[in-house]
Length: 169
Image (cartoon, rainbow, N blue to C red; front, top):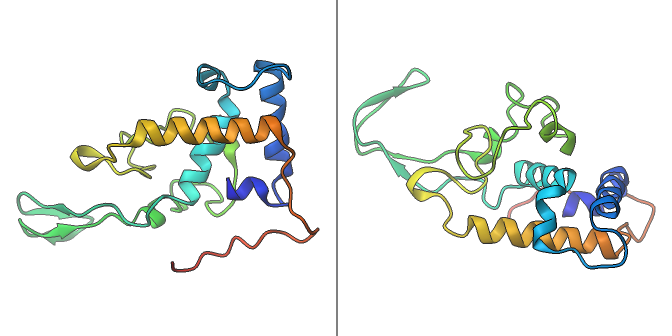
């Protein structure tokens, strides 16, 4: 939700609020069953998870047998970590990878899911070590964002942009 609170992203929040007005209206609260119709809101969540995954690295995996990956020989028993931060910002996969663009999930990357089946987007990991709370996390994130956008106008207190500089900790 950080990118939406930035003064640089009011069009994203406005588009999501317009979508909420169309599909939910102003006279009732957003319900979990509404989320499937909120395509732009889902794109915002995907884009946020792409730029700001819950963790920068995947959980450790172990090579079961000798193999070669990108020209590197990997011995059986080697522990491997996927750099999710780098993967999600790879310019060979993502056009303007440092830009917050939810629309990318409505066009070129519309079929990508965050549940670990698409190797371009793995905020919750994949395979046997995929996050067991992924369904709960996604449902809670979508519903929380939908209710915030439906009930409030988000913005920065000052006219200056919110500092989204990444740092350790």
